[in-house]
Image (cartoon, rainbow, N blue to C red; front, side, top):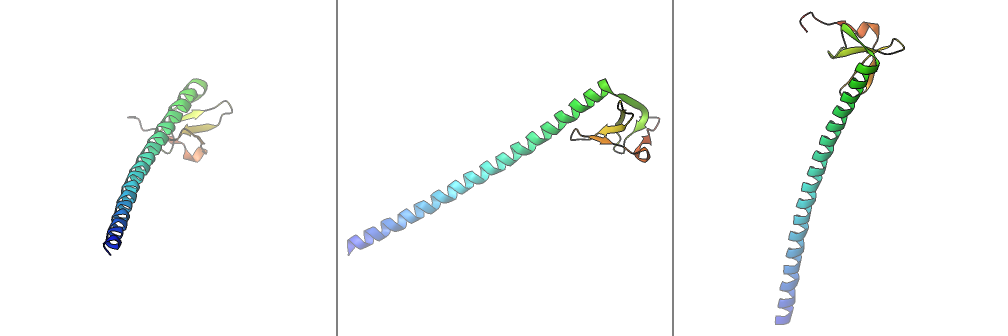
Length: 109
């Protein structure tokens, strides 16, 4: 009879230990997942900024900057070799503009 109680208590203790172990693992996994998402978000932001700077740098060298004009977001307007007007967005992509989208830059800027 005593042996049944001891085996039962050991089984109960093992079950409790296994539950605590699983909970600890899930907390570690959640922390790792949060860290991974933060790193991914930061890497994406750095990549976008790098692309933006690279494209703007090449645009200043290869294309003309249209002085006195600005894009809808307030950035510079560039003119390429085919006389197409564009600006560079925050992700580093060239966004080509219609004539109605180009605005005159205020005198103070």
